[in-house]
Length: 199
Image (cartoon, rainbow, N blue to C red; front, side, top):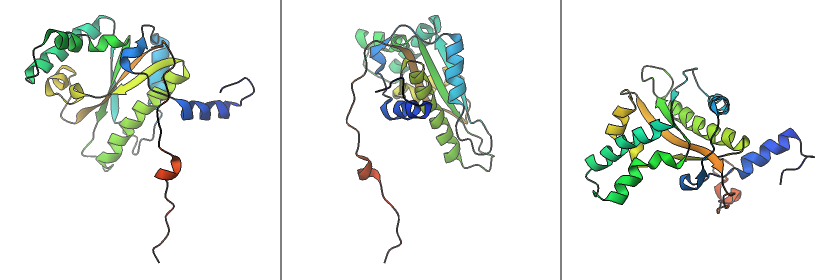
């Protein structure tokens, strides 16, 4: 539990050890304002970036752009031959309305670079994680999602992605309505190995 006697370092470690995603459907309607969003995205960019490529960029959905892009999601959903059911069509159309701000983090590969593509992709993933942590530090709820629409060609076209770009994730940002419940985490020792040479 955070208290006034904790050092800045302790508070940071507490945040990192207790950060929890909030499911998009449970995110409240009050999102970051323009300045707060810039702070979150600036923090997002402070990631390892071998070769100083900056292999990522952002597409922000706010206000009416969320419902306008919902038309793209609905059309793409139907183009994939999914069931033409009114409730599902409405869900896809209103998908981005689950949060007041949605940020698409785009992984931008430089194939001609000497930096391995895997490292460039990992850097974009680190951006997503930093955004989650920064949002949590400012008291906002956040969830990093991909789902089918992160991989759909019609959605990629609407996002104006180039051949060297892919969606690393959609980050939903808004207010915390109720604290998220903790979930089971793996025990550290089950994931830890100290290397030793074979005898």
